[in-house]
Image (cartoon, rainbow, N blue to C red; front, side, top):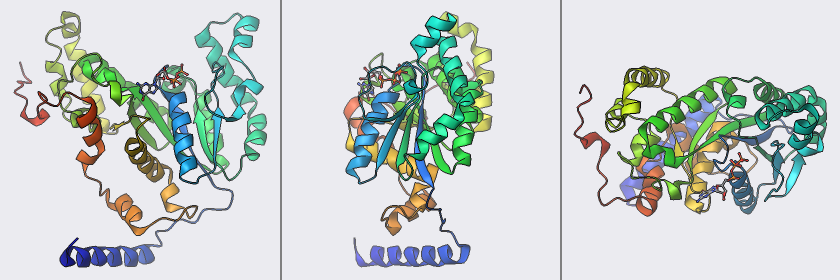
Length: 338
Ligand SMILES: Nc1nc2c(ncn2[C@@H]2O[C@H](COP(=O)(O)OP(=O)(O)OP(=O)(O)O)[C@@H](O)[C@H]2O)c(=O)[nH]1
């Protein structure tokens, strides 16, 4: 860094500090404030693996972590479980006793948890002061329109839990435009239903091109750019072509809300997990707390979103995608009206 860059940085830092003072920007949390992540997403998207990886990562960073399993169908857990819904109810018991299928059984279990919220509160009190990771079940309807999960999360917030929803979806859906539109819709409905700060994640990015090459650059999918380009990708499939107008209307809804974007993630890669953690810490407010020594750079990047967009996708793009023939989405020669 040369001297002029250094003086610029000092200036920015000073301005930031004075603004912080003027605006009383720092947030004071009470002793009991707990931070955490609510890990949700469709079946098999990698929630349990993420909780395991994130708990190890946070532990290495010196945070005291407790992983809470709220999936009553999870029978073999890779992480040390601090609190397990199976102590309250199990899916197999519900299915046997009430003669329900797995979907209905899971909905029943979540409603049962909601009804027994006192048990949950009592158990959570034992984990006071720890950073919480909640491993939820994978039934999509629990997050798009069923109310039990939302009500449980609202209770958690009343107990001063600062939460962020980490919504995982398999990244390989990007290679099929119609499926990507479904992913966008699911993510949007979940954001609207769950009403928590949200980080949407494209999981298993090491497998992103497993089922075919992406038609656009990765940033097209992570930043959710002009979605009408996706319609042109339908050309080859007549079935999907039939529903082009419907898809066009759905795309309009997603664009009008302008809420969905994604962070690409590969749990086994430290840089990827660190970038993920930065997003999560901003979203649940951990970065503004005084639980951990932080530097002014973290606060600055949080305030101005200083990380370059390319930084977020660089590693995944270079390591796991065929970049030889990839082209810039803005340079695609696509006639949207055709
Ligand atoms: N290649 C790769 N595989 C992954 C990754 N994350 C998870 N997996 C695999 O994906 C499969 C499903 O992962 P889980 O963590 O069980 O997914 P889940 O969302 O908890 O699944 P349900 O509890 O059934 O909803 C497992 O075989 C994992 O090993 C990843 O980043 N890369």
